Image (cartoon, rainbow, N blue to C red):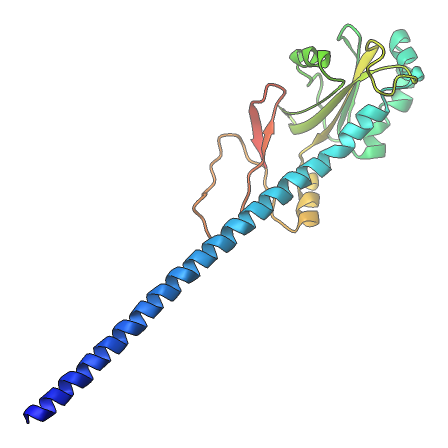
Amino acid sequence: MKKNLSVYKIVFAVICMTGLFFLLVTLVLSKLENRESENIFQASQQQLEQEAKALISISNRPLGQIAWDYTYWDEFVAAISRNNQKWFKDNITTILTSFRLEYVCVYDANFNIIHEASGDGISVRRIIPPEIFSKFKDTSLIGFSINTTAGIFEVTGSSVHPTDDPSHSKTKPSGYLFVAKNWNKDFINELSSLSGTQIKLLAPEDKTDKNDRSNVNSIINLKGWDEQVVGKI
């Protein structure tokens, strides 16, 4: 009887040790799996952030190209000096339809607005803050976001110069051109489709759950001329 009890104790001990071994293996594997999942999540997070920044940069690049290319042009300089509204209508207002933009405006060298137009279904006027012109002392091309009654616009402005000054640095500004893209539903849906992600436009005060592990997300702040956040993507 004692011998059988000893056998039972040995078997029981072996079972307990085996169970403990498998428990430890399970715990180790679970920890490794959680660590691997966290590493994958962090890597996906970083990749999404890089792609999101690249997407915003690429989507804004045409604005800078348009503003720059249109602003070393003798005819533009002459039109500003003569306040030639027909020329503006034929050559500047048409930027809206040619490049699918929602706002364009022209200022003279004294920072007076002399022409502006907005796209179909959008009625905005004088959305450029006067403070922005001080920044042209250091650069010929400026980009910023602004919140308006028609939503958030991505704006690029450039100083106007003669044709023989493509660097925008040899002559004094004859005026200023601003072009703007509205962060409307169509534009956001287009970017969502191109990126294969879900994009939302949020107010600066809106919160997101950073601890949500069911979704990988990234937040890009849209900043105004004064570096204040006017919205979030």
